[in-house]
Image (cartoon, rainbow, N blue to C red; front, side, top):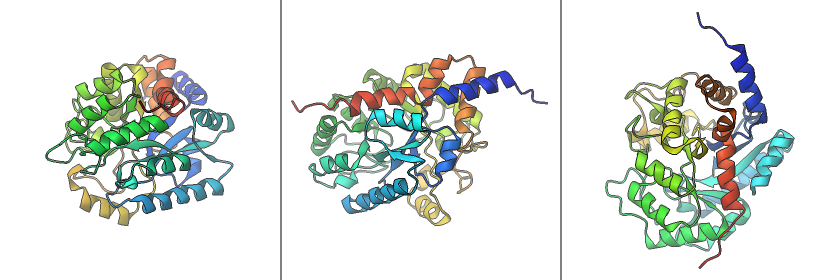
Length: 341
């Protein structure tokens, strides 16, 4: 019979009450009350990831989230600065961070980046799975690295104070981007390849390179990336295994969480995704198994806090992992735009 440690439970609840909790890859938000119940302070929502998500399509997604925020003004707010996340915590709301998971929204036009920045874009993932005008994603057979246009994009992202995200980005393109950026970069949702060797997970060297740039790596809960045994649906304990490995390599101050669990998925959208990206779908995966056994939006972060407390982590380190570390990077990048030199 499992013995429940009420002391740990109470400490976890207290940590969650005090912490700024950031899901660095929430993907989509449909049910605000679930996020509030789970203690989430802010989440990065995806405005674009398909290769067909061009300028107009992304504008349409922005207007959708404007409508969502206006529909729930007592529960949601738009995040444009790090201070907005702190305000969301004080007011008991969820801050919506605009991000993209592909460079396609700017098409071939660098001048569209300032437009997106004014509309609220704060996180920019350079590529999705494949090749675009910026560089190559992890599923390309030949990673040719950052393009000339890609270098211009990073310079402009640094100037505007938009955070560079290297999740999904091919290793050579990512290495080039790390060298090109003058600001910290992040991997919002990447697990260690040493625990589960799949294309979307990253090496110890890549983890250390992000840390050397002052960035954060977010542990991801999406099933295939959170496995510890090939093609076996993970549990929450498996997710914690990945998170702890990241802590050992990066240090607790450079680790966060990006769940990558999209509550907007439907049977139709899931079918379209699996048809397009068969290589990143486990044999057991469907709409009900894309997250670990035991995952629930309302209890996820409390579960993480409890697990880390039981393993002897300091409360300050847990609060950093839950969101404080990402908040630190957001402050550095969003609030300190770099002039062109």
